[in-house]
Image (cartoon, rainbow, N blue to C red; front, side, top):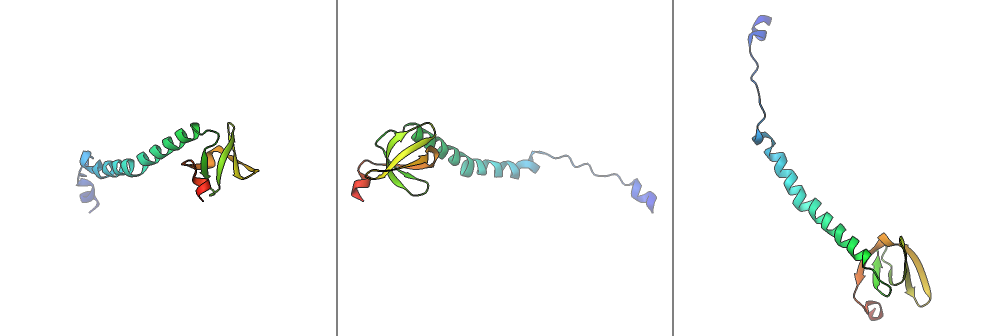
Length: 105
């Protein structure tokens, strides 16, 4: 009985492109639905931070609304009320608001 088991030859399974096609399709879907939009948003955020200027009205990641009083390399000073200035990290600035938004609130 053992000799019969050894006598059988194993079928050679050579992987072709069709075996990897589902993985390739999943990767392409991930690229266009997750990775590419995230890279685009990160690029827009970086551009917004480089173009940030004194007097711009912004919202931070924590929800703080203020006007940019001073810009440093890593930190931004926000005037959140008359005479009240807070310092936040530049990366925490999420949204650039249109001029006059703070006064309309």
